[in-house]
Image 1 (cartoon, rainbow, N blue to C red):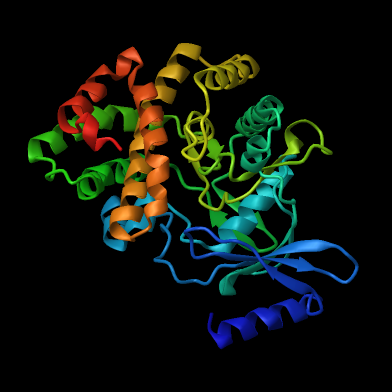
Image 2 (image 1 turned 45 degrees about the vertical axis):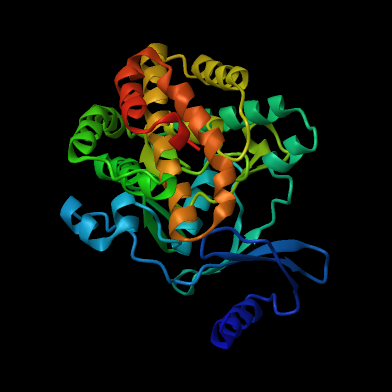
Length: 362
């Protein structure tokens, strides 16, 4: 970290009455964000987010598909490019819905700095690893999604002068992740490039699925809703027991999308039984939803999502030299196969059977 960046952070903390807080670095992930836990002299702890503005630009709300392609992956996929203003506006909108996102204590969005409420360390993933019953955790996570889906979100989220557009997870965004599977899986698995005919067939199979996803992009979508980003807060009530993190890439999307993120969790096994219980719970709450149509979309968009995640892992390994992501691939293929087992997904299953042999699914 440059001395200039460190001086900027120290000044920000001092200006917000936190200059005397002890700073404890926290483990990072594959992103450009860094976190520290701040320990105030009075014993209160807070989280310090440092997101330097180093990524390519996010998607302008009025950009055409051609302009988005020219701008690059973040704009095509409608990612927030790590922008702190996205996190701030989204967190406070979630809190206004009665949900547990961190309260924003202080922020300097242009510089990529924010101090957040500390929700603790009880990540779903760690608690379940240590033997806690996953049932109440997943039930609460489903209830939180049902709460979110009760309200159509605004086109722009705002908080204390910070504004962030909540864009639709549209056809191009859905296409981007799936199509990059075609580029990156052969590089990772040692396959020859897919033929033009195979690519054309891929596009023809996914286009109507993407159209359904875009047409029903009506609810707030966390977009990274899984056990590594959810914190258990048992002292709170009902859906507020689910502490939410890493929602800055939120979009408006089909209600099934976050269920794929939750139940097709690349980092832990979610059993078919748990998956069915979660979906049944949601559909009993949202009794206005056509069950058959929702499950068909869940399987279809889930398969698209798993293809997207396989591309991300393949790029991490083959493009960035991060072999630890290989550990997640067999599980992700398992979820993809589960989605492809739905009868309506038979044509997509046939494509994978024809073009990605079993030995290349690793």
